Length: 121
Image 1: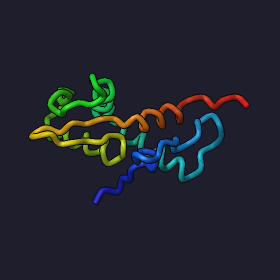
Image 2: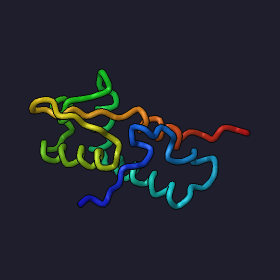
Image 3: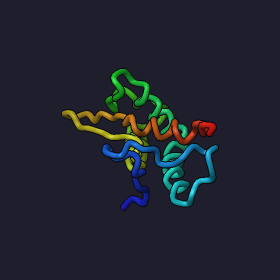
């Protein structure tokens, strides 16, 4: 049973950022925990490359067959994609024998919001 939890933000109905911008105020323990799950999943170079390949792929989604050339074996690619999906950063859909992955718009919005400078009041 995986111990990684999906960020609440990443549920399709939730579109608000998980946390305020880092420059706005110190994060609470719960906010830091949610953000850490996201950063931990992206903390591996192979996972970051896979996430980037999916996010930048034409149409916003990519077949695993189109993104598996990251210098590791196919089982390792599948392992890393599962880690990204378990962290709530990707969603997937099986079409025939292939699985297509996509980064939900809320994921990119949350990452951008977290790393954006807080607006001056």
